[in-house]
Image (cartoon, rainbow, N blue to C red; front, side, top):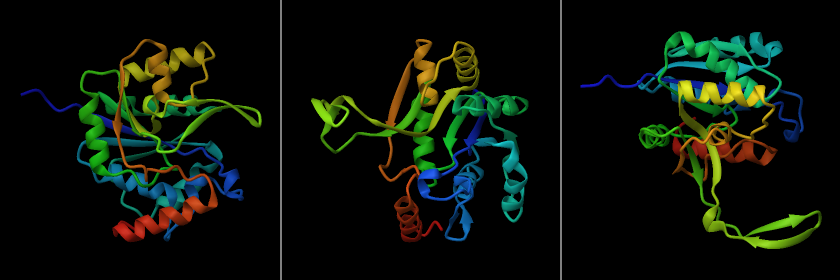
Length: 234
């Protein structure tokens, strides 16, 4: 029987949370007595499938992260690495730090998404199979319009659209090469899967919960707290 692939996770924690109205790094925001990033680290740390977790964070905030996490079990968390000037550079920094753990597959996740579940991650890993990438997503339920400035042009066929979430899963070697090449050539993708697609990779999506929200606005924090309290996962 073939050995199970080694899975690692890179958690990106660089958001400043300016739209939340404060100057605190978004992953440090308190949610029911814990920093926001705690929920992502707790999830990956609870999964036997995940052998190592690294956080990419602005270097100036690294020691503060150490202090915030000091009261929590380390589990598979191997520490932080200084992030880069872009999301892609931060992801690449985390991947390079994970090299010593010899992962076959890597999950790349935004620390601002605290509500992803173990079942969703397992479904994502199962869907990856022999593909070059997979990500969690949800079909839109609203009517979509293409716009120009303050005007509208045409309605968009929402049956051909999904809202992309994280984590996103990739073979380690494939996403590392895609990020290195994309950065070198000046490509500015908005997520990691776009770097794989740019190289002609085969990417699939897996339907996840629409509650896998990215904390962006103050009301998002209230919603996250309500969901965590209601699910007993606080």
